[in-house]
Length: 72
Image (cartoon, rainbow, N blue to C red):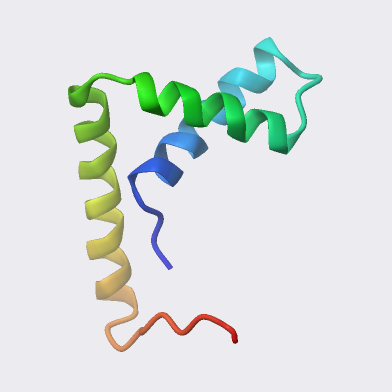
């Protein structure tokens, strides 16, 4: 399943934060990254939305019959 724009952003930012704050666990990282995302400017969010859309297109090409089916 392709990542949305926030998850794409999180994947890009997480290693940078871990370099600065190696003691943060995943929960705390998610809180910090979520706050950062909320404060990002529109052009940054648009950039990651574009990356997510490109990933979605690639995923559709690789798996044309894929349909997300969450476990119940």
